[in-house]
Structures are given as C-alpha cells and as structure tokens.
Image (cartoon, rainbow, N blue to C red; front, side, top):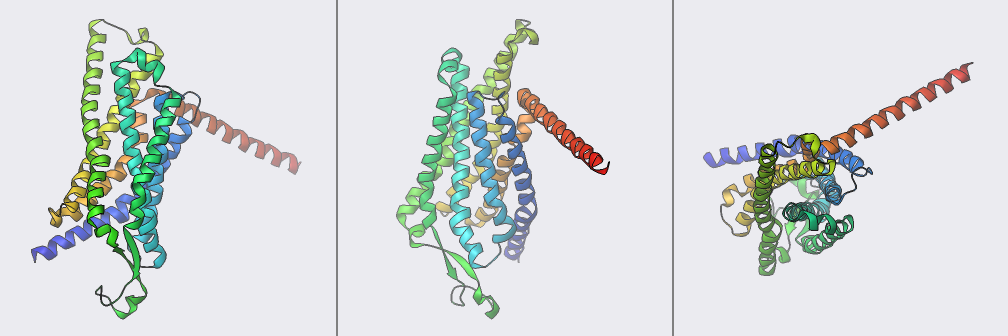
Length: 337
C-alpha cells in the first residue's frame, strides 16, 4: 500500500512539474532571454563580460525552446513523431545547450576571478575577441561530447511482449535503450561526462564564488574606511563591481541547479537509491529550468547598467510605436478628407 501511495505521489508531482510549473517557467524564460538578447546587443554593452551573457542568453533560450514541446506535447504522447523528437532531438539537444550554459558560466566566472585578482593585466587581456573565442570553443566541445547521446535510444513499436497495453495501444511507439546505452563503454563515458559537466563545474563555481563574495565584501569595507563617496568612483569601476555582484547571483543559482542534477545522474549510473532517483530527476529538471529562466530577474535586480539600457530600449520602442500609430492616424485622416 505504501509503495502504491509513493508511486502515486511521484506521478502527481511529475504531472504538476511537467504540465504546469515547467511550461510556465519555459515561457517566462524564453521571453526573458529574448529581452536579454535585445538589451545585450546594444552598443552600451559591448565589453567582454557581456559577450558571455549574450551567449548564455542564446543557450538558455534554446534549451527552453526545445524543452517546451517535450513538456506540453511529446512527453506522454505515443506517436512516432513524438517519440522520435524525445529520443533524437530533446535529449541530445537540450543536454548540449545545458552543458554549454554551465561551462559558459564557469569560464565567465574564471574570467571575473582573474579580473578581480589581477585587474590591470585582465583589463587588457580579457578582450571581446578572447571571450568570443572561448564561447566558440565551449560550443564545439559540447557538441562533440553530446554526439554519443544520439545513439542512446531508439524508437520501437509498442507490443504486448514488452508492455502492458490494450489492443488499441498497439499502434503506439516507445523509446528503448540501445545496446550502446547499456554497454560498459557508455557507462564509463557517462560517469566521465557527469564529472566534466556537473562535479568539476560545481567545484570551480563554489570555490571562485566564495572568493568573489569575500572580495566584494572587502572592497565595500575598504570604501567605508576610506570614506569613499559613490561619485568619486569612476563609472567603469561601478559597472565592474555591479557585474561581479550580478555574476555572484548567477553562480549561486547555477550551483543550486547543478548539485541535484549531479547527485541524480550519479545515483542512476551507480544503481544507488533508485527508489528516489525519479523524484530527484523531477526536482533537478525543475531547478535546471528555473536556472535557465531567471537570469533576466538577476540582471534587473543587481545590474544597474543593464537596467539603464533596458529602459532606453523600452523608451525608444514606445516612442516608435506611438509615432507609427500617429502616422497611421494622420494618414487615415488625410484619406478621409
């Protein structure tokens, strides 16, 4: 009875997360990342740190775009197209974009550490071009490590021999693990990828983020001791300090989302705690979608330069809309006369 109750609770939680919370987060995140791209493409935000934020917006938005059809349509459907999408599009593509997002965050954090530790050297060496090169290296590397996921599952017809189905269900399809997915080679490779995509970034982000928090705190104390007024700081110094605070918030959210995913993947691969692996997977997926969706909120909360540019973009858009509306109205009046 308890096992049935536990299974029912897990199924209910899965439905709530995938049918309601997940799609809402996806829509919010897609809209937020579109706004991020528009704002980050402005000339006022051309420094190298914003190159990373722009790449992060692209990868996050792409992961959400490919996740939305899975949650809304293909997760429970048994059609050939839905299962094909799940096996050959959703799983490999979303894993590629989330891995890219994680490592872009890691490289951006390392850059910020170098800048805080060696500001003069970093100001000249951490250029826009070097940031673009690093982003492309990350994308190419994550494509290469994501290719094996294309061969993990295959789509097969549902049959009485392999599922408890009724006669009317026999036209459906399901996803079946391939021999490659069950091989020792894949198990070893997957453990290596879990370390590379989850545990290594987690360690780097935790260590550097602690350093950045301490550095920001020490800088604040130093300004107070020197009685340094806000207007005595250069605008460039203010922007760099605000970006560091923004990055700290992004990294904290990334850590919260990566940790459950790392634990869940390791539990599955090590065949440990399988009773709770499904629940952990639901929670880790939800936190990952939350992480992919919340950067717009972080920018608005901690980065005044981003907010200034956002207000400028919105002001120009409203002005253009009103001007076009007025032009249409004037044209209509002239036609009437």
